[in-house]
Length: 65
Image 1 (cartoon, rainbow, N blue to C red):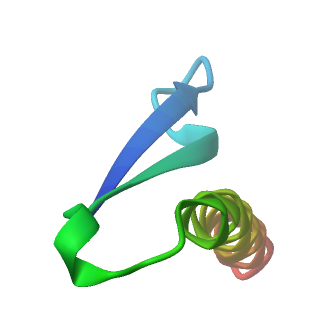
Image 2: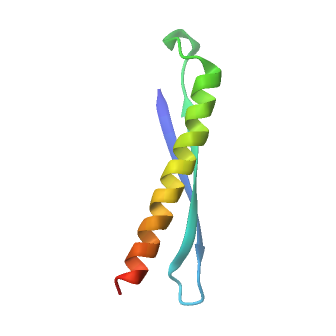
């Protein structure tokens, strides 16, 4: 099984990351026995979770400056 994370970043006028989004793809073989619907749900949930946590870290980092 491979879990692939792609990040898409939006920068502000100063070149700093303003926000980002994470896309998740999970590759697996049918012989591994995973349910495709459950893996698809994991892809969505994991992408949303990582996106929200990274954007929260960006906000916290800006507030600390």
